[in-house]
Length: 518
Image (cartoon, rainbow, N blue to C red):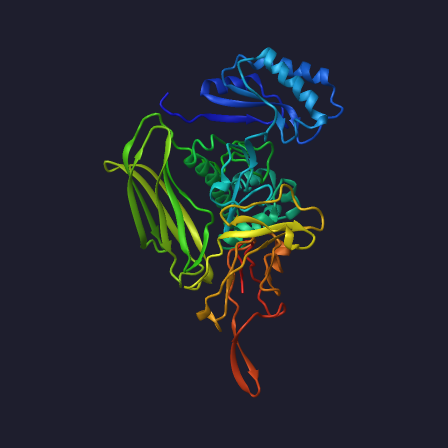
């Protein structure tokens, strides 16, 4: 067997016991199974232990001779160590040791090392899907990502027409689509990000692109960090009924476009770009770390890695390359790509093409497309990274401040703040004397979804106002600049730059977690 990577399917604890035919096919195809018992998403204080263990033993005996089974697991998203579950799970562990001592037993998932949720790559940041933590750099690492449940998309139109009548498809009949697990606000957001809401084909394509991009990002990131991360399981592979949900293959067995994005990310040899967002401001530096990944047991040796940035007309903007030694079953960083987005290149797309080659033969290619906002950053700015202070409570107290490093590392409280309490962050900034009299713009990555920012006392902004309260986090990409106005004052005209009142403002996006507070 040349390849070092392994294929695995997780048989979820909230589902059924799979058939003998399923396990035989996994044996033949070389697909490992993570097989769970029937505990999921709850506690079980009144479960009849004897009956449950008797059924579990029957399952172990009927399946234990299948080589595809990699491990047994108690179940999905429950606490196996809490009092209502612990005794039952202890008995389950003993049954596995007695009737199949050749395989490990895992008490639950997620549990001590593996994590659910996955990375949600949004226009302005990467976060964790389940709790919204902003994840930068090494904060994204987990030992094993056993459930990547991020984004949704519609199946192909041919499949939709089989379970929704033509009068309900377009214009979209929201109750009908939502009955089939559509999240309309999320789909509207994706359609806006990729150009518009007025056309069904465009609407469907937008969600399919977003779905594929995010799942591809998860698998690529886990592979580039091998073996700090040892695996990535996508939720879910196939649809359990006709729906607009997270499955890669729909109810009718037709792959969604996201399936092919994920499949390309699973090739034995890949070249990838590690980015933490996909929308950049004018005059901002675009940064990406480029990796070559080899899952084969064969050492490739010296390889050429090339990265090229094109504008929307496919004109070359930047090029960078390096030669790296690619070992067997390894990931190697080729270089850090740096390119400053032109100040006037606003509300447009640009593309990143990657190529891994050897002796003139292309071994792997990859292609990414990014966008630019409507905002251009100033030339001179102060870096707000580094040490900050934080505390948790109903009000700030000077004795409570603790240090943390932002934004590369986030020191969160051990649990969500109690009702009525907040997390406070602060940092002292020294303004250069020569900046006196110049309007100051403060860029600060958001910490939560409803931040407020205060500057030497007065409140100067927040990340969840107006549109975002109504529609949701990261609704749109672009933020328009506040306009320059001419105000009559004392019989004369005076130029000024300022905010429009709420009634004067156009419908605009407030970019959660990257909004520039002015």
